[in-house]
Image (cartoon, rainbow, N blue to C red; front, side, top):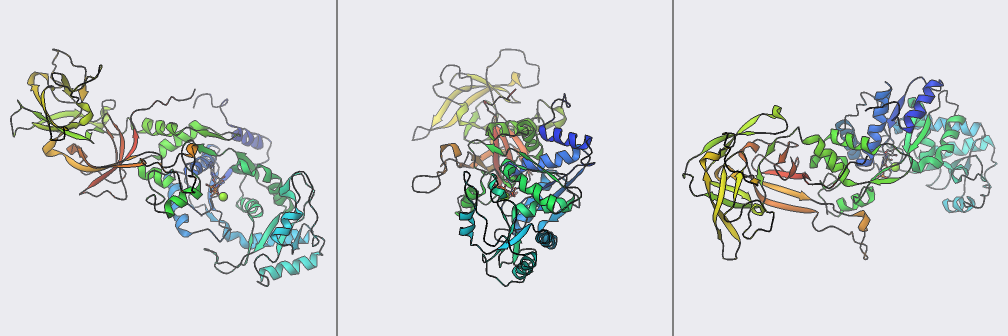
Length: 554
Ligand code: ATP
Ligand code: MG
Protein backbone atom coordinates (compact mmCIF):
# COMPACT_ATOMS: atom_id res chain seq x y z
CA UNK A 1 0.00 0.00 0.00
CA UNK A 2 1.05 3.58 -0.59
CA UNK A 3 1.77 5.90 2.27
CA UNK A 4 2.41 3.08 4.64
CA UNK A 5 3.63 5.36 7.41
CA UNK A 6 0.39 7.31 7.38
CA UNK A 7 -2.00 4.43 6.89
CA UNK A 8 -1.00 2.37 9.91
CA UNK A 9 -3.98 1.18 11.88
CA UNK A 10 -4.33 1.83 15.59
CA UNK A 11 -3.08 -1.62 16.55
CA UNK A 12 0.10 -1.12 14.54
CA UNK A 13 0.56 2.23 16.20
CA UNK A 14 0.33 0.60 19.64
CA UNK A 15 2.83 -2.05 18.60
CA UNK A 16 5.26 0.51 17.21
CA UNK A 17 5.12 2.37 20.48
CA UNK A 18 5.66 -0.79 22.54
CA UNK A 19 8.69 -1.70 20.45
CA UNK A 20 10.10 1.82 20.63
CA UNK A 21 9.70 1.98 24.38
CA UNK A 22 11.18 -1.47 24.82
CA UNK A 23 8.04 -2.93 26.42
CA UNK A 24 8.55 -5.88 24.08
CA UNK A 25 11.36 -6.65 21.68
CA UNK A 26 9.27 -8.89 19.47
CA UNK A 27 5.70 -9.36 18.27
CA UNK A 28 3.90 -12.58 19.00
CA UNK A 29 0.19 -12.93 18.19
CA UNK A 30 -2.30 -15.75 18.24
CA UNK A 31 -5.70 -16.78 16.95
CA UNK A 32 -7.59 -18.45 19.81
CA UNK A 33 -10.77 -20.13 18.54
CA UNK A 34 -13.04 -22.14 20.74
CA UNK A 35 -13.65 -25.42 18.88
CA UNK A 36 -17.44 -25.19 19.18
CA UNK A 37 -18.41 -24.47 15.59
CA UNK A 38 -17.12 -23.60 12.16
CA UNK A 39 -15.21 -20.40 11.51
CA UNK A 40 -16.90 -17.61 9.60
CA UNK A 41 -15.88 -14.52 7.68
CA UNK A 42 -15.54 -12.57 10.95
CA UNK A 43 -12.99 -15.07 12.21
CA UNK A 44 -11.14 -14.73 8.91
CA UNK A 45 -10.64 -11.11 9.79
CA UNK A 46 -9.17 -12.01 13.15
CA UNK A 47 -6.94 -14.71 11.64
CA UNK A 48 -5.58 -12.51 8.89
CA UNK A 49 -5.13 -9.58 11.24
CA UNK A 50 -3.14 -11.58 13.78
CA UNK A 51 -1.16 -13.46 11.17
CA UNK A 52 -0.56 -10.27 9.17
CA UNK A 53 0.87 -8.48 12.20
CA UNK A 54 3.23 -11.35 12.96
CA UNK A 55 4.41 -11.27 9.34
CA UNK A 56 4.80 -7.54 9.23
CA UNK A 57 6.88 -7.37 12.39
CA UNK A 58 8.84 -10.51 11.69
CA UNK A 59 7.27 -12.11 14.70
CA UNK A 60 5.40 -15.30 15.46
CA UNK A 61 1.82 -16.47 15.11
CA UNK A 62 0.17 -19.24 17.15
CA UNK A 63 -2.98 -21.17 16.49
CA UNK A 64 -4.37 -22.00 19.89
CA UNK A 65 -7.53 -23.88 20.59
CA UNK A 66 -9.24 -22.29 23.53
CA UNK A 67 -10.68 -25.59 24.65
CA UNK A 68 -11.26 -24.95 28.33
CA UNK A 69 -15.02 -25.54 28.23
CA UNK A 70 -15.71 -29.27 27.89
CA UNK A 71 -19.45 -28.95 27.16
CA UNK A 72 -19.62 -27.70 23.59
CA UNK A 73 -16.34 -28.68 22.06
CA UNK A 74 -15.79 -31.30 19.40
CA UNK A 75 -12.86 -32.77 17.52
CA UNK A 76 -14.75 -32.25 14.26
CA UNK A 77 -14.46 -28.51 14.83
CA UNK A 78 -10.75 -28.70 15.64
CA UNK A 79 -10.10 -30.32 12.27
CA UNK A 80 -12.28 -27.91 10.32
CA UNK A 81 -10.70 -24.88 12.00
CA UNK A 82 -7.19 -26.09 11.19
CA UNK A 83 -8.19 -26.62 7.57
CA UNK A 84 -9.72 -23.14 7.35
CA UNK A 85 -6.74 -21.37 8.93
CA UNK A 86 -4.37 -23.19 6.59
CA UNK A 87 -6.51 -22.46 3.56
CA UNK A 88 -6.45 -18.76 4.39
CA UNK A 89 -2.66 -18.99 4.28
CA UNK A 90 -2.07 -18.21 7.96
CA UNK A 91 0.91 -20.45 8.45
CA UNK A 92 1.24 -21.37 12.12
CA UNK A 93 4.07 -23.81 11.31
CA UNK A 94 4.60 -25.98 14.39
CA UNK A 95 2.93 -23.53 16.72
CA UNK A 96 -0.33 -25.34 17.28
CA UNK A 97 -1.45 -25.28 20.91
CA UNK A 98 -4.33 -26.41 23.07
CA UNK A 99 -5.29 -24.43 26.15
CA UNK A 100 -6.31 -27.69 27.81
CA UNK A 101 -2.63 -28.64 27.91
CA UNK A 102 -2.15 -25.79 30.40
CA UNK A 103 -4.70 -27.00 32.94
CA UNK A 104 -1.93 -27.91 35.39
CA UNK A 105 -0.31 -24.45 35.11
CA UNK A 106 -3.68 -22.80 35.46
CA UNK A 107 -4.32 -24.83 38.57
CA UNK A 108 -0.94 -23.86 40.00
CA UNK A 109 -1.67 -20.24 39.21
CA UNK A 110 -4.90 -20.48 41.16
CA UNK A 111 -3.02 -21.96 44.14
CA UNK A 112 -0.59 -19.07 43.91
CA UNK A 113 -3.44 -16.58 44.02
CA UNK A 114 -4.87 -18.31 47.09
CA UNK A 115 -1.48 -18.21 48.79
CA UNK A 116 -1.23 -14.49 48.08
CA UNK A 117 -4.64 -13.97 49.64
CA UNK A 118 -6.01 -13.05 46.21
CA UNK A 119 -8.52 -15.85 45.75
CA UNK A 120 -11.01 -17.71 47.92
CA UNK A 121 -13.39 -20.62 47.75
CA UNK A 122 -17.00 -19.49 47.89
CA UNK A 123 -20.06 -21.60 48.75
CA UNK A 124 -22.71 -19.20 47.50
CA UNK A 125 -24.98 -20.58 44.78
CA UNK A 126 -24.83 -19.09 41.31
CA UNK A 127 -28.02 -17.21 42.08
CA UNK A 128 -26.67 -15.82 45.32
CA UNK A 129 -23.47 -14.74 43.66
CA UNK A 130 -25.53 -12.82 41.14
CA UNK A 131 -27.60 -11.17 43.88
CA UNK A 132 -24.48 -10.23 45.87
CA UNK A 133 -22.90 -8.75 42.79
CA UNK A 134 -24.90 -5.52 42.88
CA UNK A 135 -25.80 -3.54 39.79
CA UNK A 136 -24.25 -0.90 37.60
CA UNK A 137 -25.49 1.74 40.01
CA UNK A 138 -25.09 -0.12 43.33
CA UNK A 139 -21.96 -1.74 44.73
CA UNK A 140 -21.95 -5.45 45.48
CA UNK A 141 -21.82 -7.15 48.89
CA UNK A 142 -18.93 -9.22 50.14
CA UNK A 143 -19.51 -12.95 50.21
CA UNK A 144 -19.64 -14.39 53.76
CA UNK A 145 -16.87 -16.78 52.63
CA UNK A 146 -14.56 -14.00 51.49
CA UNK A 147 -12.40 -14.00 54.60
CA UNK A 148 -11.60 -17.67 54.78
CA UNK A 149 -7.97 -18.30 55.75
CA UNK A 150 -5.37 -19.20 53.16
CA UNK A 151 -5.05 -22.68 54.69
CA UNK A 152 -8.77 -23.33 54.51
CA UNK A 153 -8.94 -22.07 50.94
CA UNK A 154 -6.03 -24.28 49.90
CA UNK A 155 -7.71 -27.29 51.45
CA UNK A 156 -11.11 -26.56 49.92
CA UNK A 157 -9.65 -25.89 46.48
CA UNK A 158 -7.81 -29.18 46.63
CA UNK A 159 -11.04 -30.88 47.62
CA UNK A 160 -12.69 -29.25 44.61
CA UNK A 161 -9.98 -30.68 42.40
CA UNK A 162 -10.28 -34.09 44.01
CA UNK A 163 -13.93 -34.40 43.16
CA UNK A 164 -15.37 -34.01 46.64
CA UNK A 165 -18.12 -31.61 45.55
CA UNK A 166 -21.03 -31.61 43.19
CA UNK A 167 -21.21 -29.29 40.19
CA UNK A 168 -21.98 -25.79 41.40
CA UNK A 169 -21.41 -26.56 45.08
CA UNK A 170 -18.27 -24.44 45.34
CA UNK A 171 -16.33 -22.04 43.14
CA UNK A 172 -13.00 -20.28 43.36
CA UNK A 173 -13.24 -16.51 43.12
CA UNK A 174 -10.64 -13.81 42.63
CA UNK A 175 -10.57 -11.45 45.60
CA UNK A 176 -10.62 -8.01 44.02
CA UNK A 177 -13.26 -5.43 44.89
CA UNK A 178 -17.00 -5.90 45.32
CA UNK A 179 -17.49 -2.16 45.00
CA UNK A 180 -15.59 -1.76 41.75
CA UNK A 181 -17.47 0.29 39.16
CA UNK A 182 -16.43 -2.43 36.72
CA UNK A 183 -18.71 -5.41 37.38
CA UNK A 184 -16.08 -7.80 36.02
CA UNK A 185 -13.85 -6.89 38.95
CA UNK A 186 -16.40 -7.82 41.61
CA UNK A 187 -14.71 -11.01 42.75
CA UNK A 188 -15.21 -12.92 39.47
CA UNK A 189 -15.44 -16.69 39.52
CA UNK A 190 -12.22 -18.16 38.14
CA UNK A 191 -12.77 -21.90 38.68
CA UNK A 192 -15.88 -24.03 38.78
CA UNK A 193 -16.63 -27.67 39.51
CA UNK A 194 -17.85 -29.57 36.47
CA UNK A 195 -17.84 -33.35 36.33
CA UNK A 196 -17.43 -33.65 32.62
CA UNK A 197 -15.23 -35.51 30.20
CA UNK A 198 -12.98 -33.25 28.20
CA UNK A 199 -12.11 -34.10 24.59
CA UNK A 200 -8.39 -33.82 25.33
CA UNK A 201 -7.86 -34.44 29.04
CA UNK A 202 -10.67 -36.96 29.51
CA UNK A 203 -11.68 -37.31 33.18
CA UNK A 204 -8.42 -35.98 34.59
CA UNK A 205 -10.07 -32.77 35.79
CA UNK A 206 -13.38 -32.00 37.40
CA UNK A 207 -12.62 -28.32 37.88
CA UNK A 208 -12.36 -26.03 34.91
CA UNK A 209 -11.05 -22.44 34.67
CA UNK A 210 -13.31 -19.61 33.52
CA UNK A 211 -12.47 -17.76 30.31
CA UNK A 212 -11.39 -14.49 31.93
CA UNK A 213 -8.84 -16.28 34.06
CA UNK A 214 -7.74 -18.88 31.53
CA UNK A 215 -7.18 -16.60 28.57
CA UNK A 216 -4.50 -14.31 30.03
CA UNK A 217 -2.71 -17.35 31.45
CA UNK A 218 -2.71 -19.02 28.03
CA UNK A 219 -1.33 -15.88 26.43
CA UNK A 220 1.37 -15.47 29.05
CA UNK A 221 2.48 -19.11 28.87
CA UNK A 222 2.93 -18.82 25.10
CA UNK A 223 4.81 -15.54 25.31
CA UNK A 224 2.13 -13.66 23.40
CA UNK A 225 2.90 -9.95 23.33
CA UNK A 226 -0.27 -8.53 21.81
CA UNK A 227 -3.48 -10.36 22.60
CA UNK A 228 -5.91 -9.03 20.06
CA UNK A 229 -9.58 -9.59 20.70
CA UNK A 230 -12.94 -8.06 19.91
CA UNK A 231 -14.58 -5.06 21.50
CA UNK A 232 -16.88 -6.87 23.91
CA UNK A 233 -13.80 -7.74 25.97
CA UNK A 234 -12.83 -4.13 26.55
CA UNK A 235 -14.50 -4.13 29.97
CA UNK A 236 -12.67 -7.33 30.81
CA UNK A 237 -9.25 -5.83 30.21
CA UNK A 238 -8.74 -4.71 33.85
CA UNK A 239 -9.31 -8.32 34.91
CA UNK A 240 -6.90 -9.55 32.22
CA UNK A 241 -4.29 -7.14 33.53
CA UNK A 242 -5.03 -8.16 37.13
CA UNK A 243 -4.47 -11.84 36.35
CA UNK A 244 -1.13 -11.38 34.57
CA UNK A 245 0.05 -8.97 37.27
CA UNK A 246 -0.91 -11.13 40.25
CA UNK A 247 0.63 -14.20 38.64
CA UNK A 248 3.81 -12.14 38.25
CA UNK A 249 4.63 -12.99 34.66
CA UNK A 250 7.89 -11.44 33.55
CA UNK A 251 6.61 -10.25 30.22
CA UNK A 252 2.87 -9.80 30.66
CA UNK A 253 0.90 -9.76 27.42
CA UNK A 254 -1.20 -6.78 26.50
CA UNK A 255 -4.81 -6.97 25.34
CA UNK A 256 -5.96 -4.79 22.45
CA UNK A 257 -9.57 -4.75 21.24
CA UNK A 258 -10.96 -4.08 17.78
CA UNK A 259 -14.49 -4.04 16.35
CA UNK A 260 -16.02 -7.26 15.05
CA UNK A 261 -16.71 -7.61 11.39
CA UNK A 262 -20.38 -7.78 10.50
CA UNK A 263 -21.87 -8.16 7.05
CA UNK A 264 -25.20 -6.66 6.08
CA UNK A 265 -28.08 -8.97 5.19
CA UNK A 266 -26.11 -12.07 6.10
CA UNK A 267 -26.29 -14.33 9.11
CA UNK A 268 -22.98 -15.01 10.83
CA UNK A 269 -24.13 -15.99 14.34
CA UNK A 270 -23.25 -19.56 15.24
CA UNK A 271 -26.66 -19.99 16.85
CA UNK A 272 -28.63 -19.44 13.65
CA UNK A 273 -26.24 -21.38 11.50
CA UNK A 274 -26.37 -24.29 13.92
CA UNK A 275 -30.15 -24.25 13.69
CA UNK A 276 -30.08 -24.16 9.89
CA UNK A 277 -27.71 -27.12 9.91
CA UNK A 278 -29.55 -29.12 12.57
CA UNK A 279 -32.96 -28.61 11.00
CA UNK A 280 -31.57 -29.77 7.66
CA UNK A 281 -32.44 -26.48 5.98
CA UNK A 282 -28.94 -26.24 4.61
CA UNK A 283 -26.56 -28.90 3.37
CA UNK A 284 -24.19 -28.79 6.36
CA UNK A 285 -21.85 -26.09 7.67
CA UNK A 286 -20.35 -25.66 4.23
CA UNK A 287 -23.61 -25.00 2.40
CA UNK A 288 -22.62 -22.32 -0.14
CA UNK A 289 -25.35 -19.99 1.13
CA UNK A 290 -23.59 -19.58 4.46
CA UNK A 291 -20.61 -17.37 5.19
CA UNK A 292 -18.60 -19.90 7.14
CA UNK A 293 -15.12 -20.13 5.69
CA UNK A 294 -15.85 -23.70 4.59
CA UNK A 295 -18.96 -22.45 2.77
CA UNK A 296 -17.15 -19.60 1.08
CA UNK A 297 -14.45 -22.00 -0.08
CA UNK A 298 -17.03 -24.45 -1.43
CA UNK A 299 -18.86 -21.65 -3.19
CA UNK A 300 -15.65 -20.61 -4.96
CA UNK A 301 -14.27 -17.71 -2.97
CA UNK A 302 -10.47 -17.61 -2.85
CA UNK A 303 -8.15 -16.82 0.06
CA UNK A 304 -6.91 -13.82 -1.95
CA UNK A 305 -10.43 -12.39 -2.26
CA UNK A 306 -11.05 -12.75 1.46
CA UNK A 307 -7.74 -11.12 2.23
CA UNK A 308 -8.57 -8.23 -0.07
CA UNK A 309 -11.95 -7.89 1.61
CA UNK A 310 -10.51 -7.87 5.11
CA UNK A 311 -7.95 -5.27 4.11
CA UNK A 312 -10.61 -3.06 2.56
CA UNK A 313 -12.64 -3.30 5.77
CA UNK A 314 -9.71 -2.05 7.81
CA UNK A 315 -9.38 -2.27 11.56
CA UNK A 316 -11.57 -0.10 13.71
CA UNK A 317 -12.62 0.62 17.24
CA UNK A 318 -16.34 1.04 16.55
CA UNK A 319 -18.86 -1.58 15.46
CA UNK A 320 -20.32 -1.29 12.00
CA UNK A 321 -21.52 -3.51 9.19
CA UNK A 322 -19.89 -3.94 5.85
CA UNK A 323 -22.00 -4.39 2.75
CA UNK A 324 -22.07 -7.91 1.35
CA UNK A 325 -21.57 -6.55 -2.20
CA UNK A 326 -18.09 -5.49 -1.13
CA UNK A 327 -17.19 -9.14 -0.63
CA UNK A 328 -18.60 -9.84 -4.09
CA UNK A 329 -16.54 -7.02 -5.51
CA UNK A 330 -13.40 -8.64 -4.12
CA UNK A 331 -14.02 -12.04 -5.64
CA UNK A 332 -14.80 -10.50 -9.04
CA UNK A 333 -11.60 -8.50 -8.87
CA UNK A 334 -9.61 -11.58 -7.95
CA UNK A 335 -11.04 -13.85 -10.64
CA UNK A 336 -11.56 -11.57 -13.58
CA UNK A 337 -8.08 -11.87 -15.07
CA UNK A 338 -7.24 -15.30 -13.69
CA UNK A 339 -10.09 -17.38 -15.05
CA UNK A 340 -11.14 -18.43 -18.55
CA UNK A 341 -14.34 -16.95 -19.91
CA UNK A 342 -16.30 -19.76 -21.46
CA UNK A 343 -19.81 -20.12 -22.80
CA UNK A 344 -22.59 -21.66 -20.75
CA UNK A 345 -26.29 -21.45 -21.49
CA UNK A 346 -28.53 -21.75 -18.47
CA UNK A 347 -31.96 -21.27 -20.03
CA UNK A 348 -31.52 -22.65 -23.52
CA UNK A 349 -33.36 -22.27 -26.77
CA UNK A 350 -32.16 -23.76 -30.00
CA UNK A 351 -30.75 -21.58 -32.71
CA UNK A 352 -30.67 -23.20 -36.14
CA UNK A 353 -28.61 -21.73 -38.94
CA UNK A 354 -30.63 -22.73 -41.99
CA UNK A 355 -27.92 -21.94 -44.56
CA UNK A 356 -25.13 -23.77 -42.71
CA UNK A 357 -24.56 -27.23 -44.18
CA UNK A 358 -25.90 -30.07 -42.06
CA UNK A 359 -23.15 -32.26 -40.58
CA UNK A 360 -20.45 -29.67 -41.17
CA UNK A 361 -18.26 -28.48 -38.30
CA UNK A 362 -15.46 -25.94 -38.14
CA UNK A 363 -13.17 -25.15 -35.23
CA UNK A 364 -12.94 -21.48 -34.40
CA UNK A 365 -10.13 -19.86 -32.45
CA UNK A 366 -11.39 -18.26 -29.30
CA UNK A 367 -9.40 -16.31 -26.73
CA UNK A 368 -9.90 -17.67 -23.23
CA UNK A 369 -9.80 -14.25 -21.64
CA UNK A 370 -9.76 -11.14 -23.78
CA UNK A 371 -8.11 -9.15 -21.00
CA UNK A 372 -5.39 -11.68 -20.33
CA UNK A 373 -3.65 -13.24 -23.31
CA UNK A 374 -1.66 -15.54 -21.07
CA UNK A 375 -4.71 -17.73 -20.66
CA UNK A 376 -4.34 -18.71 -24.32
CA UNK A 377 -6.94 -19.80 -26.82
CA UNK A 378 -9.17 -22.77 -27.46
CA UNK A 379 -10.82 -24.36 -30.47
CA UNK A 380 -14.54 -23.87 -30.38
CA UNK A 381 -16.64 -26.13 -32.62
CA UNK A 382 -19.20 -24.29 -34.69
CA UNK A 383 -22.05 -26.02 -36.49
CA UNK A 384 -25.63 -25.73 -37.64
CA UNK A 385 -27.41 -26.16 -34.32
CA UNK A 386 -26.53 -24.08 -31.30
CA UNK A 387 -27.99 -23.20 -27.94
CA UNK A 388 -28.43 -19.60 -26.93
CA UNK A 389 -29.95 -18.00 -23.83
CA UNK A 390 -33.71 -17.59 -24.00
CA UNK A 391 -33.38 -13.95 -22.99
CA UNK A 392 -31.20 -13.24 -26.03
CA UNK A 393 -34.23 -13.61 -28.28
CA UNK A 394 -37.43 -11.60 -28.21
CA UNK A 395 -40.41 -11.85 -30.47
CA UNK A 396 -41.37 -8.25 -29.81
CA UNK A 397 -38.35 -6.37 -28.51
CA UNK A 398 -38.55 -3.17 -26.51
CA UNK A 399 -36.52 -0.16 -27.60
CA UNK A 400 -32.77 -0.51 -27.17
CA UNK A 401 -32.92 -4.28 -27.33
CA UNK A 402 -30.02 -5.14 -29.60
CA UNK A 403 -30.05 -8.89 -29.42
CA UNK A 404 -32.01 -11.30 -31.63
CA UNK A 405 -35.48 -10.53 -32.90
CA UNK A 406 -37.09 -11.18 -36.26
CA UNK A 407 -35.15 -9.38 -38.96
CA UNK A 408 -32.26 -8.34 -36.68
CA UNK A 409 -28.63 -9.32 -37.06
CA UNK A 410 -26.18 -9.98 -34.20
CA UNK A 411 -22.70 -11.37 -33.81
CA UNK A 412 -22.29 -14.83 -32.38
CA UNK A 413 -19.27 -14.45 -30.13
CA UNK A 414 -16.01 -15.69 -31.75
CA UNK A 415 -18.05 -16.66 -34.86
CA UNK A 416 -20.30 -15.10 -37.50
CA UNK A 417 -23.09 -12.61 -37.92
CA UNK A 418 -26.49 -14.28 -37.93
CA UNK A 419 -29.82 -12.78 -38.89
CA UNK A 420 -33.08 -13.95 -37.40
CA UNK A 421 -35.44 -15.17 -40.12
CA UNK A 422 -38.19 -16.94 -38.18
CA UNK A 423 -39.01 -18.81 -35.00
CA UNK A 424 -41.08 -21.78 -33.85
CA UNK A 425 -43.41 -22.01 -30.84
CA UNK A 426 -44.74 -25.07 -29.07
CA UNK A 427 -48.44 -25.64 -28.33
CA UNK A 428 -48.17 -23.45 -25.21
CA UNK A 429 -46.82 -20.53 -27.16
CA UNK A 430 -43.30 -20.95 -25.84
CA UNK A 431 -40.52 -20.25 -28.31
CA UNK A 432 -38.51 -23.42 -28.91
CA UNK A 433 -36.46 -22.65 -32.01
CA UNK A 434 -35.00 -19.56 -33.57
CA UNK A 435 -34.05 -19.81 -37.24
CA UNK A 436 -31.27 -17.70 -38.66
CA UNK A 437 -29.04 -17.35 -41.68
CA UNK A 438 -25.35 -16.62 -41.34
CA UNK A 439 -23.03 -14.55 -43.49
CA UNK A 440 -19.78 -16.48 -44.20
CA UNK A 441 -17.95 -13.19 -44.85
CA UNK A 442 -18.32 -12.05 -41.25
CA UNK A 443 -16.16 -14.59 -39.46
CA UNK A 444 -14.55 -13.13 -36.33
CA UNK A 445 -10.92 -12.28 -36.87
CA UNK A 446 -11.29 -12.37 -40.67
CA UNK A 447 -10.80 -8.62 -41.00
CA UNK A 448 -14.37 -8.13 -42.15
CA UNK A 449 -15.13 -4.40 -42.08
CA UNK A 450 -18.53 -4.31 -43.72
CA UNK A 451 -21.70 -3.43 -41.83
CA UNK A 452 -21.80 -3.34 -38.03
CA UNK A 453 -24.13 -4.94 -35.54
CA UNK A 454 -25.00 -3.70 -32.09
CA UNK A 455 -25.36 -6.96 -30.23
CA UNK A 456 -23.04 -9.87 -29.51
CA UNK A 457 -24.42 -13.02 -27.92
CA UNK A 458 -22.77 -16.22 -26.77
CA UNK A 459 -23.72 -19.75 -27.79
CA UNK A 460 -22.90 -23.40 -27.25
CA UNK A 461 -22.69 -25.91 -30.13
CA UNK A 462 -25.62 -28.26 -29.48
CA UNK A 463 -24.10 -31.61 -30.53
CA UNK A 464 -20.97 -30.95 -28.46
CA UNK A 465 -22.63 -29.43 -25.40
CA UNK A 466 -21.85 -30.76 -21.93
CA UNK A 467 -24.85 -30.97 -19.63
CA UNK A 468 -24.39 -29.65 -16.12
CA UNK A 469 -26.33 -28.71 -13.03
CA UNK A 470 -25.99 -25.11 -11.96
CA UNK A 471 -26.93 -23.77 -8.53
CA UNK A 472 -27.86 -20.13 -8.12
CA UNK A 473 -27.79 -18.61 -4.66
CA UNK A 474 -29.29 -15.73 -2.77
CA UNK A 475 -29.02 -14.94 0.93
CA UNK A 476 -30.83 -17.51 3.01
CA UNK A 477 -31.79 -15.21 5.86
CA UNK A 478 -31.79 -11.47 5.67
CA UNK A 479 -30.82 -10.28 9.13
CA UNK A 480 -32.15 -6.81 8.39
CA UNK A 481 -35.58 -8.21 7.54
CA UNK A 482 -35.70 -10.21 10.77
CA UNK A 483 -34.33 -13.64 11.47
CA UNK A 484 -37.57 -15.05 12.93
CA UNK A 485 -41.21 -15.16 11.93
CA UNK A 486 -43.89 -14.48 14.52
CA UNK A 487 -44.29 -18.20 15.26
CA UNK A 488 -40.57 -18.55 16.03
CA UNK A 489 -39.69 -20.28 12.78
CA UNK A 490 -36.80 -18.93 10.73
CA UNK A 491 -37.64 -16.26 8.17
CA UNK A 492 -36.15 -17.98 5.15
CA UNK A 493 -35.76 -16.62 1.64
CA UNK A 494 -37.61 -19.17 -0.57
CA UNK A 495 -35.29 -18.32 -3.47
CA UNK A 496 -32.03 -18.82 -1.64
CA UNK A 497 -31.28 -21.85 -3.82
CA UNK A 498 -32.42 -22.23 -7.40
CA UNK A 499 -31.26 -25.25 -9.32
CA UNK A 500 -30.82 -25.26 -13.08
CA UNK A 501 -31.03 -28.98 -13.75
CA UNK A 502 -29.78 -28.90 -17.28
CA UNK A 503 -27.49 -26.15 -18.44
CA UNK A 504 -25.41 -26.52 -21.60
CA UNK A 505 -21.69 -25.83 -21.53
CA UNK A 506 -19.20 -25.56 -24.34
CA UNK A 507 -16.80 -28.52 -24.66
CA UNK A 508 -13.86 -26.62 -23.12
CA UNK A 509 -15.39 -27.37 -19.72
CA UNK A 510 -14.47 -31.03 -20.17
CA UNK A 511 -12.46 -32.30 -17.22
CA UNK A 512 -13.39 -29.49 -14.82
CA UNK A 513 -12.54 -30.55 -11.26
CA UNK A 514 -13.65 -29.61 -7.76
CA UNK A 515 -12.91 -25.95 -6.91
CA UNK A 516 -12.09 -25.04 -10.54
CA UNK A 517 -13.72 -21.77 -11.36
CA UNK A 518 -14.68 -20.02 -14.57
CA UNK A 519 -16.42 -17.01 -15.87
CA UNK A 520 -19.60 -18.03 -17.64
CA UNK A 521 -19.30 -15.37 -20.26
CA UNK A 522 -21.81 -12.48 -19.96
CA UNK A 523 -23.17 -14.06 -16.79
CA UNK A 524 -20.99 -14.52 -13.72
CA UNK A 525 -18.35 -16.54 -11.93
CA UNK A 526 -18.98 -20.20 -11.17
CA UNK A 527 -17.11 -22.89 -9.30
CA UNK A 528 -17.25 -26.67 -9.53
CA UNK A 529 -18.94 -27.95 -6.37
CA UNK A 530 -16.52 -30.02 -4.32
CA UNK A 531 -19.18 -32.19 -2.72
CA UNK A 532 -21.62 -33.10 -5.45
CA UNK A 533 -19.87 -32.70 -8.80
CA UNK A 534 -18.70 -35.83 -10.63
CA UNK A 535 -16.96 -36.28 -13.99
CA UNK A 536 -20.27 -37.71 -15.32
CA UNK A 537 -22.36 -34.87 -13.99
CA UNK A 538 -20.71 -31.55 -13.35
CA UNK A 539 -22.30 -29.36 -10.69
CA UNK A 540 -21.51 -25.65 -10.52
CA UNK A 541 -22.10 -23.05 -7.82
CA UNK A 542 -22.65 -19.46 -8.77
CA UNK A 543 -20.07 -17.49 -6.83
CA UNK A 544 -21.26 -14.11 -8.00
CA UNK A 545 -22.92 -12.56 -11.01
CA UNK A 546 -21.09 -10.09 -13.22
CA UNK A 547 -23.50 -7.26 -12.60
CA UNK A 548 -23.04 -4.99 -9.66
CA UNK A 549 -24.05 -1.57 -8.54
CA UNK A 550 -21.36 -1.67 -5.87
CA UNK A 551 -18.81 1.11 -5.83
CA UNK A 552 -15.64 0.92 -3.83
CA UNK A 553 -15.81 3.44 -0.98
CA UNK A 554 -13.22 6.19 -1.30
P1 ATP B 1 -19.26 -16.36 17.68
O1 ATP B 1 -19.70 -15.16 18.43
O2 ATP B 1 -19.59 -16.35 16.22
O3 ATP B 1 -19.63 -17.65 18.37
P2 ATP B 1 -16.78 -16.33 19.03
O4 ATP B 1 -16.19 -15.01 19.27
O5 ATP B 1 -17.47 -16.97 20.16
O6 ATP B 1 -17.68 -16.27 17.73
P3 ATP B 1 -14.30 -17.69 19.16
O7 ATP B 1 -13.94 -19.03 18.70
O8 ATP B 1 -14.32 -17.43 20.61
O9 ATP B 1 -15.71 -17.36 18.52
O10 ATP B 1 -13.44 -16.59 18.42
C1 ATP B 1 -12.09 -16.72 18.09
C2 ATP B 1 -11.54 -15.35 17.78
O11 ATP B 1 -12.23 -14.76 16.68
C3 ATP B 1 -11.71 -14.40 18.95
O12 ATP B 1 -10.48 -13.72 19.14
C4 ATP B 1 -12.80 -13.47 18.50
O13 ATP B 1 -12.65 -12.21 19.08
C5 ATP B 1 -12.63 -13.45 16.99
N1 ATP B 1 -13.89 -13.14 16.32
C6 ATP B 1 -15.08 -13.78 16.48
N2 ATP B 1 -16.04 -13.20 15.72
C7 ATP B 1 -15.45 -12.18 15.06
C8 ATP B 1 -15.92 -11.20 14.12
N3 ATP B 1 -17.19 -11.15 13.73
N4 ATP B 1 -15.03 -10.30 13.64
C9 ATP B 1 -13.75 -10.35 14.03
N5 ATP B 1 -13.24 -11.24 14.90
C10 ATP B 1 -14.07 -12.15 15.42
MG1 MG C 1 -16.36 -17.29 22.06
